[in-house]
Length: 110
Length: 114
Image (cartoon, rainbow over all chains, first blue to last red):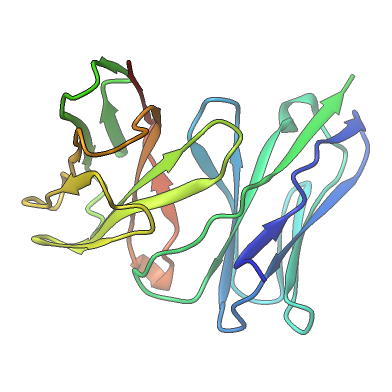
């Protein structure tokens, strides 16, 4: 099993829709999770950090399911500006190397 | 303004030449990282450094070298031994302030070798 697995998409959704995508991880020692968004030909930018069962920031909600080893990202009321690739990063502590998921591409359509 | 800077944004080199990519941060972060991203691919770790004068190989270190003489700086040299050097190179840094270790990225350097 890969360390991090994400459905590459693309997820094509209309403006205003709710969309969710999952990230599965293999290391059960992962304590925290980061979601990044990456726009085309740009650097990844931190969207959200998850240190417990979940986190919510405005229209974005992350939920962690430790038993099944996946974390989901839910985006409500999608905006055109949400179009990007979303990268998942499980983290098990310290300055050790992390593995980025290959990302899920979201395209919000007018 | 605090942040991570990478220069140049675009770099063109001839095959067989070594090239050094710059990465500087003024966030006072302890750790710094270099990643490579190929079109349609994820990020792959080249090297990382947790502290000055120390660094570790990542998953794809062959053909690359780094140094960490100052906390603020972590330059990456792409040597002629790297077989497919054309890629998007991203530098990141992180700190354990508050027990968090999120990585923050610079804007990247696009290297094209012909």
